[in-house]
Every structure is written in C-alpha cells, then in structure tokens.
Amino acid sequence: MVGDPDGSRVGVSVDPQEPEAERIVHVTDVVQEWVMESVLWPERPTNWPPCPHHPRNHPLAAKVVQDRAVWVCPVDETSFYVVGSLPAS
Image 1 (cartoon, helix red, strand yellow):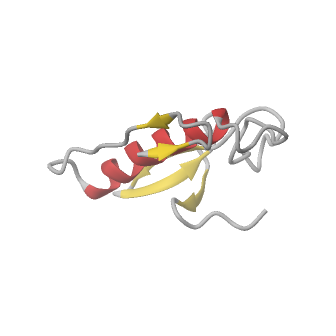
Image 2 (cartoon, rainbow, N blue to C red; image 1 turned 120 degrees about the vertical axis):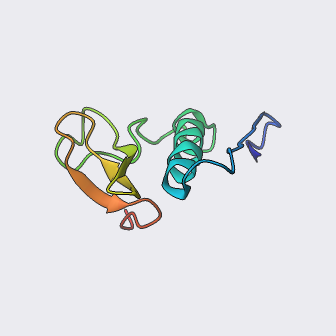
C-alpha cells in the first residue's frame, strides 16, 4: 500500500509468476500514477519523471526492454534509466 496524509491509499500487488522485470514495471506504474496524483506534490508538474527529450510534454514510462525495467520516452521509445536509478532532480 502507498498512501497520502489524507488517509487515501492505493494497493500494490504483483503476480509472483511474472518475470521480475514485469513485476517491477507494474509496481512502478502504480507508484508513478500515485505520485502524479498525490497531494504530496501539489506544486510539482504532473509529468513525473519528465522525459529528457520532451520535458514539458509527458513523463517517462516504465517498460521492459531486454529483460530489464527501464524508463523510456513513450513517443520515441528511447531508454534513459533503469527503474530505481533516476538522477536526483
């Protein structure tokens, strides 16, 4: 579970039979959605994490590439970072 100070919560679960990279992408999708909608970030942009190629247009998306969970641009499919290794902003 992840939750906001207001008491709202979102459940996170995975299928243990899925490959590890798929499980990581699933959890990343849930947490990314929570972060973008969270009251913890009211003054922040909703495109988190921002795409280095299109920082004002959309966030990166988690995707499995070569059996690894990575952050990719959803427009041009460029891989940027392994999930869990975003640079500090």
